[in-house]
Image 1 (tube, rainbow, N blue to C red):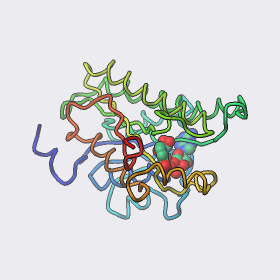
Image 2 (spheres, protein in one colour):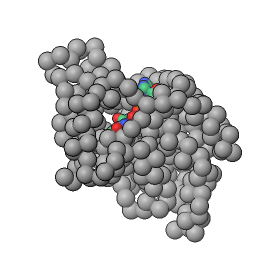
Image 3 (cartoon, helix red, strand yellow):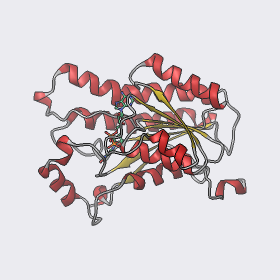
Length: 264
Ligand SMILES: NC(=O)c1ccc[n+]([C@@H]2O[C@H](COP(=O)([O-])OP(=O)(O)OC[C@H]3O[C@@H](n4cnc5c(N)ncnc54)[C@H](O)[C@@H]3O)[C@@H](O)[C@H]2O)c1
């Protein structure tokens, strides 16, 4: 492996798309990748930062990094294709695709409307499928660099390995992402496309609603051995590792960043 892989800027000169990077974990990933020298494409349906502050691209530019915003609904096939095409036109290549965008609609099975189920699947699972597919199609055309034509990092969850209380569509979509990750890793290893997932536990982001419900927080507190909830940067650091050349000979994993939730 070249020494350059171990320098401070672990993604120097690489082009990375991060979906859902306006807010929360995606925003932290985009900012960290930019600090490590990546050209970051922020792909989101909105530039509004749920937790407050300047838009992601503005903060990256202010920090001296490189980033552009592309309005993209990940459930829209044409929009995802346009996202990858624009990225390659602008930067010449797609090194890393981070599939982080998600929506939430917590219901038990018997209270789940068909339309809401379809929308959850369209964004949380089909969106990841479409982004992986367009990214992989592009990566297959690229030269191998640091042993990879490209790397994909998907955001799964501990919910998807164990039941997400009264949140069936979210859990099913996240279980699907873990499977999709393994399947892509196995099918495209020979093509030097790397595909891994990061599975966050309870991470405090700007989302309100049910995620701030005291009963939901209390359960997460009881389930998390580490004496604090996660921060977006905890997940971003794991995504950086999997996106970088330091993660060699690793594909198809679902890396827990959960303060021990799944260990206890
Ligand atoms: N926060 C947690 O505790 C936690 C735990 C486990 C897994 N995760 C996963 O981490 C990822 C990020 O979670 P978060 O808490 O930062 O979420 P968030 O709600 O704070 O941010 C989600 C982002 O996705 C964007 N988005 C929504 N629909 C979109 C669409 N159709 N196309 C493009 N962008 C869209 C939103 O605008 C927003 O910027 C998700 O995949 C989530 O499932 C989060």
